[in-house]
Amino acid sequence: MSSGQNYTDNDVFFVNSSESIKIEVLHYSPANIISNYPPILFIHGSNIAAWAWDNFCRWFSNKEHDCYTMSFRGHRQSTKTPKKDKWWSLNEITNDISVITDAIIARTGDKPVLLITLAFRHSFRGGFLQNYLKNNHQKVACRVLFASPSPYRYKANLFADSCKIFSRHPIIPFLKALFTLNHFAIAETPELIKKTYFSKAFPDSMAREIHPKLEKFCFIKGVVIRLNNKPFVDPSRIKCPMIVIGAEEDKVFPDNIKNILEISEAYGVGYDIIGGAAHNIMLDLTWEDAAIVIFNRIHEKLRMKKQ
Image (tube, rainbow, N blue to C red; front, side, top):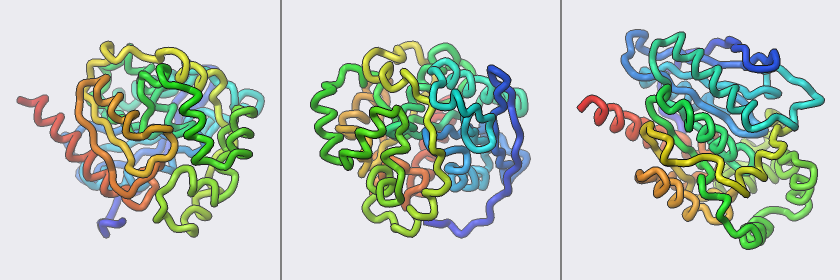
């Protein structure tokens, strides 16, 4: 969907993280330079990078938000270390979020809204974000969990979940991803990426266009096991306002609606489901519907804060 509006261009800068890693950041200036709205940081999931948020960044910058989107270490123009890109720890990845957030606060003098998308690899970036916020929520104006995993995922019945996953995904690619700890295996072809991450209506031609942009490695050693088998965050420790967004056709989580309900209950907030969208909402056909919902929810929080 396109609004037909004229969007701003972006520029690129780099921020130093741990272990001499440089993190790529794309910046989209607001259409109105004298904007009083908070900046927004968009955080990607596995096998994609900052580019995946281009639709959202252009849309929100046109609505007068200063927008930033980062590429985690090992992705796009961020530092690559071939011997380690599959083995980053939860704390190392969380550190990338921390240094970028601090850089945005230093540049703008404001607290960023944080957005995140998540999936069967990048959905786990919701775990990274929640892990970051447990000690840094005071730096964040508002958090948006976007197709994210529940903080209570570790309580799930793994056998039942596995059966549901097997029923939705081709068995051989799924097993390959499981045993190699590289989830690119379930997105190795345009057909697989559409089946896993996009809605039924998503055109095959668009899946073929997106597929070459995917990163072929995934830095998740121990992270998936941790998120699935032990608490990665105590929701009561996160005090910043929360917005929860789900996708109607999300096939990544074994029980999508239950997952969304658990998140909303954990943080004591409502939720929105984007109709006609699958897990990669920000790239699916109804991405602008999601942008409108998030914009409205963010500004509801801002109005409440002023009262």
